[in-house]
Amino acid sequence: MGKRPARRQETKNREMSSFPAKMAMWDFNHCDPKRCSGKKLARLGLIKDLRVGQKFGGVVVSPNGTSPVCPDDREVVETHGAAVVECSWARIDEIPFGKIGGRHERLLPYLVAANPVNYGRPWRLNCVEALAACFAITGHRDWAEQVLSHFTWGHAFLELNEELLDIYEECTDAKSVQEAQQAYLDAIEQEAEQRRQSKLTGETVIGGAEHGLPGELPPSDSDAYEYEDEDDESDSEVGEGIDIGESDDESNDENGESDEDDGDDEVESVNEKLKGL
Image 1 (cartoon, rainbow, N blue to C red):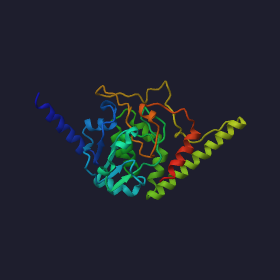
Image 2: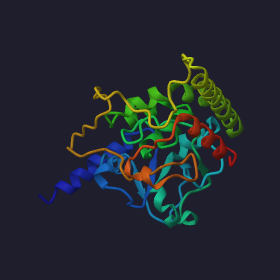
Image 3: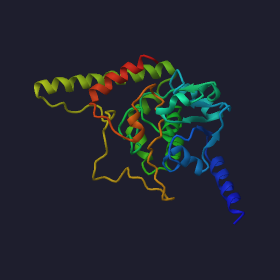
Image 4: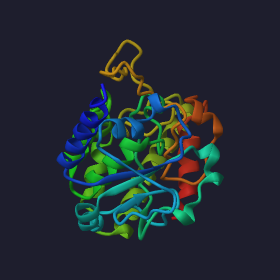
């Protein structure tokens, strides 16, 4: 009985050493341990817990960042890894950002969540999605696939964002990522305008972006995104807010509630937020 904890720690150490990059998080315990992707990675021994007061040498995906993750960050990620801040946006004022983070704090560019709570919603990534996005943008789609493989819905994140990740990966620096992001959002806005016009004329708009509209959910008769955990623990991300692409949000998102706003309003809101980048 007394040796079991030691064996579990050895297993965790092997898991952590087997992953190609370092992963870490500052966990402020704002969510249910059984429903947090960051805590699941910790249980698997794939991510290191950092204390308040500790800094991290790699890329830190954080709402405190001022520029987006870009391919130029590849060497930093390969050498020092990536970290996230596990916290709730409803309690963001409690986070002592001056005592965490590091030299390479980054936002994420426009991406769409695939976790079951916020499926199809822009910016609403959880911890594992944020890490996977960081890896993919810096040229390591294989690392992204590996870390997401521990979640039954993980493959959906890369599929849903394949076009965007390809675009960002082809960029060079933060400025080019911002420009690519804006071009993509301009295209969405143009489509939204076409939809507005079609409502007035009664015409149907065919084609357009396949994702990015808030509240877009998987088909009700599909179990492709149901959570199944080998430990009988729910992976639902209720209460986990890693909204690292923007700086404000509604508190009802923390409970997994979806907005009733339409896609047109979301596009306008997103473009307003981008002015701060």
